[in-house]
Length: 539
Image (cartoon, rainbow, N blue to C red; front, side, top):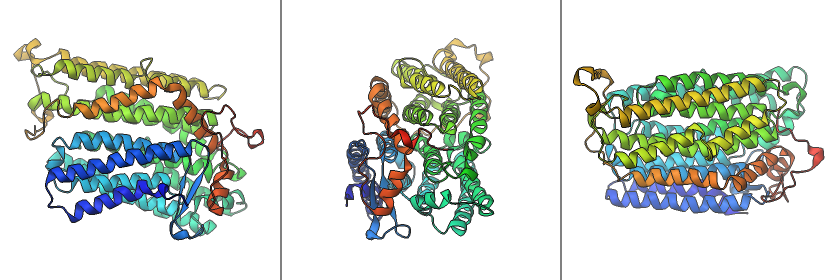
């Protein structure tokens, strides 16, 4: 048994418990323990990524209990990719927090490690019940992180966040109850076999359970109309937490990809096309509403949060097509968009600190001390998130548009994805102009009307630049690496999508407890699987 598979869950869990037990240790020690843990996670994730790239699916049975009753973790190319993405974003966030943001409240690093544990567990688990358990772990940790530091606005936004997610958890349990009551199992591999045999009156019940789970995952992914909580919540929380939350929305996206390519994958005629018919119009509408929200945003972090929702809409547009090419394109775009949104949250925070009382509101303020460095970081982030070539956002969107060729809704997809990108660039240009060029020295005092309610309360304890620039540079460098290595990265996502298109190997591996000889295509190979298995991954 390959024990490396459980380490992305075990390492942050042990670290969190140690940090809680030794809560009175010096803050420097807490930071060192937390950072070393995340560095170890980066190394483990890189090793798992290399291992999964061979195309082998590796199951890990806890206590050696056999499915469908035992707990099982599964490493495949998609899970390895998500764990690696979590580790990189987590490293940037914890380094940024260690410059002083973690002092705003208690147990920041313990909560941070529990959040990483929940994220990695959700990406690796092989059954729906433990997906729910890891959802709850990461959500409970996120409640503490979101409210870290307190403040009236943060608590008000946090209450909405907590209430909505509690409602989502309740629907999740109901959905699991419907599925378990209908089919008698929640192990995803076993469930996939059961769903294929569904017929008669049971079909409507299973469809109901599948749709309820889709609503829950859409809430976690922040799709319309369930995203309105996100811009305020992410805009009010601290920057390193918002950066980490950039990967948290991807748990919903990941769950939709995993569940609707493996369990409800269209091999049952009764469920064929169900998720696609629901998801595509919702994803396109999400892009439209969130893009206009970004243009209308009054703060940098509010705008970044809306652009995060736009990126989720673009990603889900690709996923909703449920073809191998489209899912590969969506995965490539997800890597880029997660890293760049996390970086932009950190850059926005540094700008906010430099602008004093005005913070990140889009009103004139005195010139910043480090305007050149901040301008360079903001311009690079804006170019990347806006989709300027040769950065990864451009390739990702082109890749997604090409994958829609032949789809009846292709004109809508092209129009809305390109239109949403243009609105995003307008929002970024407007914000950059307000922050860097329209300073208070260039505006007459009588024209400098800053409504008092728009001003946030400046926290003088937050460290100033360049203390946090290393983290944002790290994430921006990752974005550049993804763009420079577009060929190898896109081959990996192609192979991951190919593996998702061939779920039989995954199912056999989980149920037998043995690593599959090869599922899908090994990294570096141009062979994209057996022809008889078809190209469609889902409905």
